[in-house]
Length: 453
Image (tube, rainbow, N blue to C red):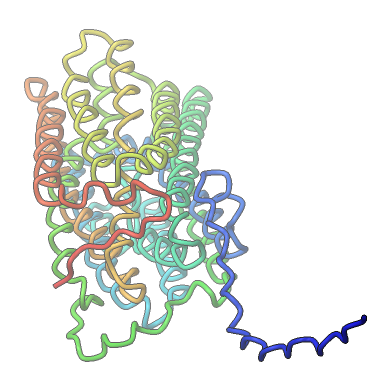
């Protein structure tokens, strides 16, 4: 007997296909090597121009006070020139950086480069103190070997647009590394060139003037380079929802935190202004009779150590956070600064100085990354500019005091103690006020935030 097979059961309606799952982007490699390889053409251009500028700053810093002394200026006038250099940079940079996103970042960078040329040209052409003071006030000159003018703030803002947030601290670490290496190379080149000219019988004032002329030439080269950057370095549109917020100095929602950080940074810079590299080189010359060639070698080594430390800062910050890295590396470096003049001989003084430089700049890329991380994208030039200008303002006051102290044999070491003391105060206040965000930046994917006004 056979049985007929029934029809197969009817298939039910096929389930509706849902939307395809969104592809999860692979995690961004925030490591040092990936951050360096990830730079686009504008990023590489900014790195190259940073290198050229910092070479010029290091080139000038070793010889600047020696040049002014060779011109016949007394200690008080030298201090006034150094202070007004920083005062002028402060006022000029405040206006330029807070307006750069509106009038064009490239235009501001070209203008700053031409002001470098102007200052260098006037310094090389005259020994008349009033004209030197005027050029120092309206031009861009770095007596410290560190950043001055509008460049740093605008470059940080532009770089932060070209890399993912996860790579920001590492990118800033490389950015600072090339700056330190360039500053070190400039210091070494200035020392060797001036020593070579002195050994050939060239008058001291003419030997040091050659350095100043070289600085002016670098300003022209920078203007040409900044003019070739692409449109991507310009500021993005303002964040939605920020139109109704009052804008002061280019800041809106982040104004309170930026102003608080600026006040703290000015204390740190005020301390550092007591003993900038140019006066530190002069101190070694007075205390131990160190010649320009040796001075160049000392600060070449010091700035190389600072360069290496900036890369270490990125790795440390990825583990313990930005604020912790800023404070816990800066405190011991300031103790070492106080110890430099207590050393009984030149080798020990150099050794402590080099050890201090191996720690002192580890807070720089972390500080820059922290400032950028707590503001909106359209505030970044202004935030970096306001905090940078606060540092320049703090540093502008103290050189006029310390140059007089150094010229007095009984007070020659006091600038070191004042510098270390004020910088330690800054570290303690920074940790007190921002320790609640101390872990920010401790993971590669973290994008730090902080309450805004």
